[in-house]
Length: 79
Image (cartoon, rainbow, N blue to C red; front, side, top):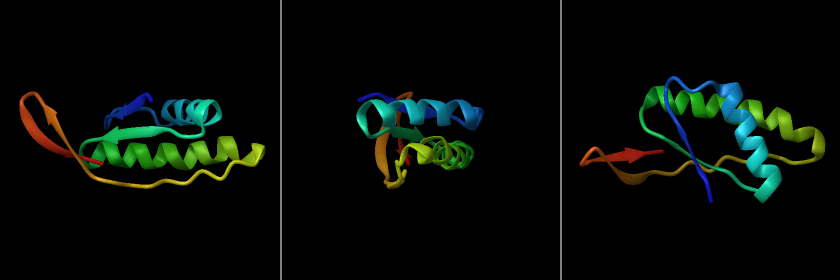
């Protein structure tokens, strides 16, 4: 499963397209966002993607969670 890594500079429309593509392909998409700005872009993308897939009868659901990841040798919490 491909994990979409979102940054604060990610374009929500582009991420939404990737989410919609993954959902159509495998019925799910997983994102990783570290930091408030990245999380903001990720949530915008989910809202936009919901509009992309809704006409085909798909109701997009978001399940937020925390996980520990190592970034440049430092432990970080991701959403």
